[in-house]
Image (tube, rainbow, N blue to C red; front, top):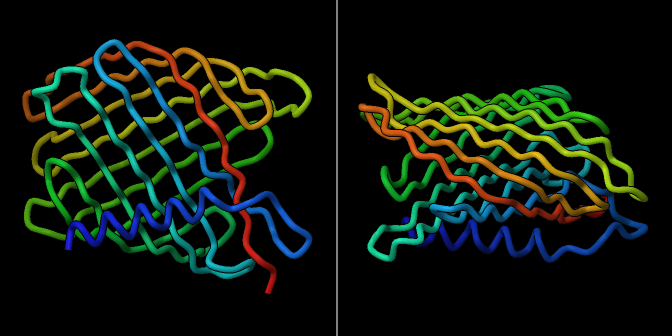
Length: 222
């Protein structure tokens, strides 16, 4: 089951990433941000996919993939995959159901909701979710970014994203900071990742830099 789940997510990601720029019979959707952060302790790959099944369709798909590679060979890599089938309530609010797959915690079904605001200057996301299993983790993900998009010039870019996860005790939380610039579909700059792990809240800070690309996506008109 787990291998099939991973295969499905990777296949969907490859299909989305391989799409071309908008054609005459296609409508642009939200781009796929693909980011690499290289730090002093580990490297982090992160990608987010959010798509409608068809233009104007209230049903869609959300996928978050995070993969952390430690520089110490004896330390296991850490991955997190969240895949959700979504239903759009209105312009800003979505609900859905899907599953989490974690390197520590395994495969668990979830209930999920999202409130988001995006325009040409800011982006804001608030996503609560809860795992539907014994000792399942409740999580709250949030993101804020500021970008003054200008296709002809380099523009400043700022983002902070945070997550808190726990049940009757703290399980895992983090806050990630990005400060740099954006040129066309590329973003780059300085990065700080701060993580808090376990009931005793052991902290870890990773300093480095990041580069990301916004992969254009589209879907055919119906």
